[in-house]
Image 1: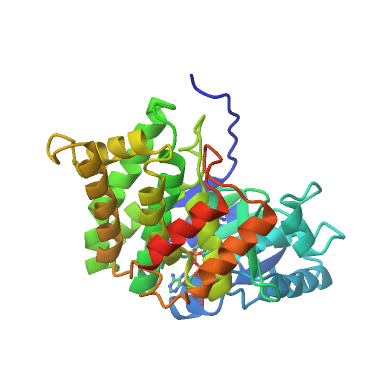
Image 2: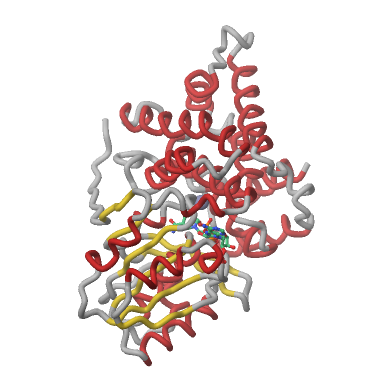
Length: 387
Ligand code: NZQ
Ligand code: ZN
């Protein structure tokens, strides 16, 4: 039986080359805009100029310097500037980090609470400023969901929280062609794992969601070699943008049991080491599948092996071999993107494992759709991911 669900997604998607020029039609002229941006890539690829040209004559205040894995320390400064300039609309021009930071800014600007308290509460229950997005990197799906992930530099913590959907997001497939290949690889890995966290759970719940998730996985597997060879290919980049947005805008989660354990573990590794989000996931997912294969995921793994990789039990001399081969195929998929696939190769210190397990134990964190992934199982996953 399909579980009850409510779905609402008000984000207007504006996809296509040159559509940044439509910003004036998307933002009412009376708004005082706070433009939130990252470290400067948009100055080099022409996006900043295109945004400035489109917003000529509008009231715009610029905030630069949102870092990857955005920190609350930087966000406090943006909130202060936004208040001082009486901004009442936030336009995020960047990737997941800039968008997530903006999702906290739109809440904090309407609140007396410190931004970190909003993150730790998990949700802000008051007003929000409206938010618009010009996306520069496909990966997180943040352009069409209401979530955000914020770090604290001081305590080396990283948590997700719930905010508001952007009113609109502009997706120009030429814009991400200026990304370094490593970021494209991390983005593909992140998208792949978003789909897996919604897919690799209960069997037959609902059938349509399985087929849609498999559609995104197949598309990623189809386009990844071409994008790895030439990430300047605008058509392939457009295909990837659609995958990334659909991967985490809620379309794959109607009535679905979800298991975000690879993300929870990955966030801790990133918080402690700075390793790029998608890269941590590429390392941890195969280990998660390996450890959880006999703890509730066997049937779905078999479906994944058969439908995604064509690895049937008949062809592989049995179910166990098919699952082993599918996990190995997943690992090789990430390796072919150019990502190292062990924590050791990614130069993550071994002590990080103890610290992640200590944190989960202290917080009483138990993960997985069956709530059976204890901190000791997390240790097994991390040890396996290390080798
Ligand atoms: O800061 P700039 O100079 O712009 O450089 C960025 C940054 O160094 C660069 N970049 C972005 N677009 C570019 C570009 N360089 C050249 N050309 C372009 N077109 O790429 C680097 C990475 O950017 P970032 O925004 O950090 O990447 P991503 O989109 O992967 O976001 C990662 C953050 O999103 C969170 C992650 O945890 C991490 O903090 N996530 C957010 C989610 C959500 N809101 O739903 C879900 C995800 O699972 C994820 O946790
Ligand atoms: Zn992710």
